[in-house]
Length: 220
Ligand SMILES: C[S@@+](CC[C@H](N)C(=O)[O-])C[C@H]1O[C@@H](n2cnc3c(N)ncnc32)[C@H](O)[C@@H]1O
Image 1: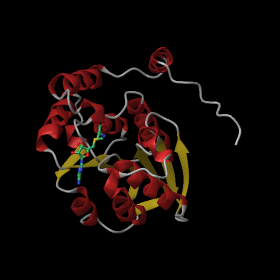
Image 2 (image 1 turned 180 degrees about the horizontal axis):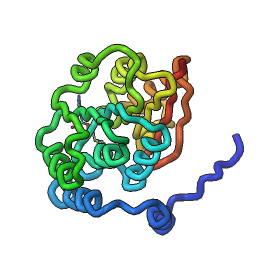
Image 3 (image 1 turned 90 degrees about the vertical axis):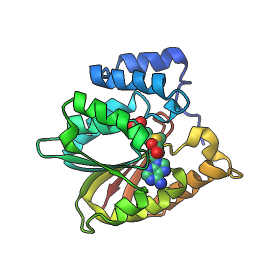
């Protein structure tokens, strides 16, 4: 193994990255600030700021119009993807928290995209199992309870259209994923990453974006 080319992401370098990405719009910025103000203890769950424009970019790049999100929280990722949808597109957003997603509902309405988001409050595994079974999903964003990632994957992959994109967050799990003795969420992500690598239905890459982001493309 040769040395990594990744520079250390100092606060200054991180700020530079944010400064050279498309900025959050007014509603997205307000959503981030509201989440930190009202849910200070949970705000760390919010999708990283640089991932909001990345998700929008991926939606536009792929032309996705049928999106499934697993793990909505206060709805930043949902908002960003919904804003990037073509006319008639929709995000099915899965979460179990009425309280947290209520913050998102307000932002989605403020941004004028509430009609593009179908929020389903239930254990995500139940929502996914109830979805149509044929190959129709263009893009997935998976960002919920790590212990269930493999189960979600197994529900989602057969429903992806050929060429459809799965985007999976936290696949480096704060760096703990490299530890063979990892437990809890880190162990679940280790198992998930091995599962993806062994899955010949997809073509996949693990990127060092934020807390680790896996991109996987459904093969024919
Ligand atoms: C990391 S947060 C999602 C962050 C979100 N993508 C954003 O942009 O801010 C994880 C979310 O998964 C949800 N969650 C946890 N377990 C779940 C389950 N079994 N079914 C559905 N949602 C679940 C939590 O309620 C939480 O809102």
